[in-house]
Image (cartoon, rainbow, N blue to C red; front, top):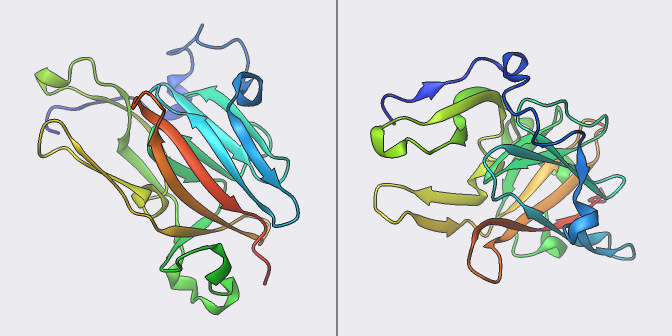
Length: 209
């Protein structure tokens, strides 16, 4: 949107959201996080309250933890992907989109060409943190990494009002920094009261070769 006001790079954002949290918070304490874990099938479900524009939610697939940090705050020591509203980023990972109908019919990760995987990119106009002046053509953004492919799991068409939300229904293969792979599918972006920003993600980890 024209006239958008851009924030400085993340290091300069420190202090903007002081007071929101004294320290990173675990969502497991409030009914969010890894709400279903099946160790036998290596599958489960993650439920994230991503309704606030001022938070990143860092997901650690290894230790089954979700940590919430204010935008501009320090990420936890271990994480694999993160969610801000509908935006995503990875920790030195890359993402491929699959046409598989379910986790059981995924292609072998090593069978995919390297160009099928999309790494994060630096963005200055994707991570929205303040829409209070949107009617005046002003939106505030934070600069940060962003994965354009994984973020396609939900399309938000703002050419009409109200916006049109469309789930891709796709499974996304996430190549982690340690070389292992996870499969993710966004299955809902609302809670039971139809409030948007509540993300339900089904996962398979690890994806066996």
